[in-house]
Length: 369
Image (tube, rainbow, N blue to C red):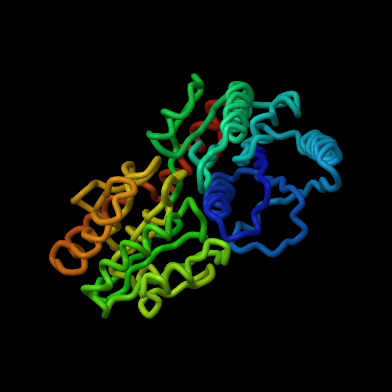
């Protein structure tokens, strides 16, 4: 089966790139799919994550003013798809243009849209003006119009189902990045968070909770790994809160698995999520997670008080108390960590890849190895 993924870029350290590297590689290696990835303005072959050598890549160049970019992208995409003649096309583009690919291409074969973020991504810092509200409403209307042309509209969590009204909705979660035999000792006095500095990730909220924790346990550290954006002012906030000595900001690293194994608690302070793959990665190492019950993902992944802790979204005091609970109760920390490692098996790559394989077979009525 020839499968084409249409994306923006796959050379970065983001979640979509990681998911695609796992999923596409699994389908190519284990199911013998002929997979082609079409990118936009990606002028490098150096990828942050490892992709199967069986995959093929095609890049569409679209430069210039907005009209030129649209024209060049449309023309380049049509030519590429015409040349490839795929059996199925999967679009992994959370931007508005992704919703109109079936119309641009004339739907030459069955097409699937993969939504990797919540509609809450439109929520920005600060008060939303009337102009912004109108713009957002218009954007959602266009999404609702374009999305109905896909054969399947795939979201990551059950909560995401509430954001769309399509009849072709389906939930397929992200696969695990790894499932090691080893696990964290849960003895290091380290709390971990992973993700880029942004309003979405809510590190400002995490630092405020950490201030309350640090007042009691100054021997623990908080390590945050992710693309650093000085405009977010997190280093300054840490200084103002008096926690700079116990908070460490690091850029993305390829060996993030080692950081999970060294941690004893994982925290996710996001205001909203598409899924929360970092939770499943931490759990794979037997690390109990504390997360805000934000839309959407954490409540699908974490069973509260069984393999982690869910906190009402935005409750900084309770989030701090949750961290303190797992710091101070080693028995509970270990029990939750053990349960977490077992619970996360449902996201094993072979399980998720089989779901995708069945979906593609159902669309094409062809057999795949």
